[in-house]
Image (cartoon, rainbow, N blue to C red; front, side, top):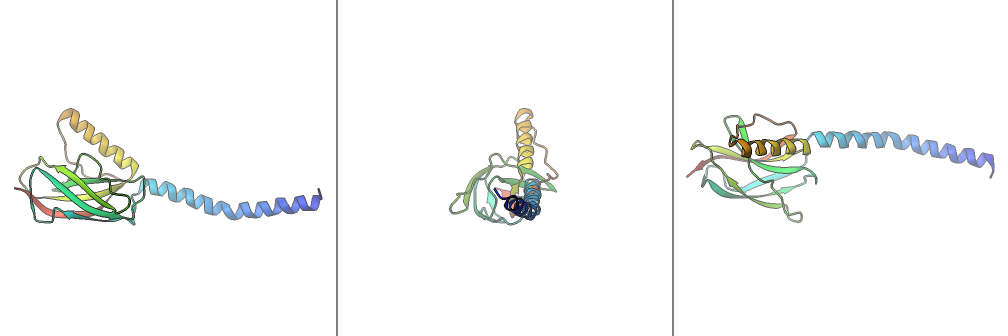
Length: 162
């Protein structure tokens, strides 16, 4: 094979490689960031219950979500006085329609509370699961102040047990 051709092929490969490296590095950085921060594109609603409604201790919720990344998790949480209590069981939307339903069990006091839908990273999901497991083992579920890697997508306010 002609040495000039070999040098030309090696040179062309080096140029292509040099052009691809920045793009590959950016993709790696974005992938790392996406595992640390929840999706900023996802949009969701909680259609039921509606704000300022009375609910039973066990009540059904429903809504829609669009634009979230697969691999991220969705959780409902009760919020009251600056703390939140994730509810058992992740929310799983229908992949085609984005519609979701869930049942919430609320054993808190009689004060009004908010209900939010969160998108969370895998590390925040693991923290929620650990918190729930500790609560099941101890019977105590102290409210959480915040968890890195969570973003509220939707909220209904001033629900009351009735």
